[in-house]
Amino acid sequence: MAQVVAVLGKGVVDPSQPILLADDLGPVRGDGLFETINVRQGVAWQLEPHLERMARSAAKMDIELPSLASIRELCEQALTAFGTESEGALRLICTRGLETGSAPTLWATLNPVPDSQRNARRDGLKLLELSLGYPADARARSPWLLGGAKTTSYAVTMSAIRYAQSKGYDDALWTSEDGYLLEGPTSTLVWLNGETLYTVPSDTGILIGTTAAFLFENAHELGLKVGEERIRPADLTAVDGAWMTSSVRGVAPVRSLDNVELNQSPRTAELQKLAGFPTPE
Image 1 (cartoon, rainbow, N blue to C red):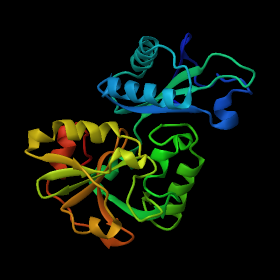
Image 2: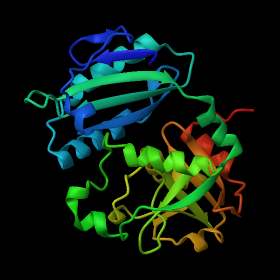
Image 3: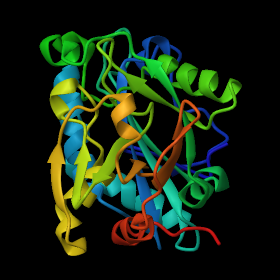
Image 4: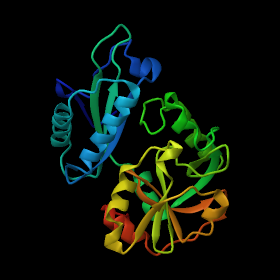
């Protein structure tokens, strides 16, 4: 059960009580969008970039998102109820509304970040390469595939994670049908080659990660340049370091891909500090 639940127009509600009608298109068809935001000392980190991405997702899906001012107010209500002691994950969910027609349904949940996610910052990740089934440029030329939108249609996403874990891995890393690395089911691939920090170009249809974007905007503080390029799995073994980034897991080093050990960069701690993610002892 969520620790804090807040509903647009109602504020914080009892998390044990239902908030959705049976014909809401979110659970019925997975027809909705969401954002998950890191919370530190009671503050939603990178809230505005998350809201901007949420608006872009809504536009791609033709969902009329409630005003950003009302969503900010909803976030503040949830944050106040959560307090300042724990690192949290604030999730905003917006569905298209009822199957019979209605305004969108929007609510927030807020929970502590699980230890398993925090520990990945220290222990790193063992990844399994899985095919997404599309060429790298398929989603860019096929807008109905909703490339770059953060949707609630997560059955394939969670299936990929479960499959990887059933084989003894921590997570998956999706590849295109033509052999390029794309993204994790819930995270963005970032790697270092020399003094340049890279990620996968957005024209591949990946979701543009807010944590990765923050690192790229501020990489100059570490004396790093930034770039985008397509990369194949075999080439990742030659880079100086690779990380999966997300708002919950933070900056987690990639230890191996398909049981091939990757180089470990001494700059992991710098990147984690830059983005402000605490690392367990």
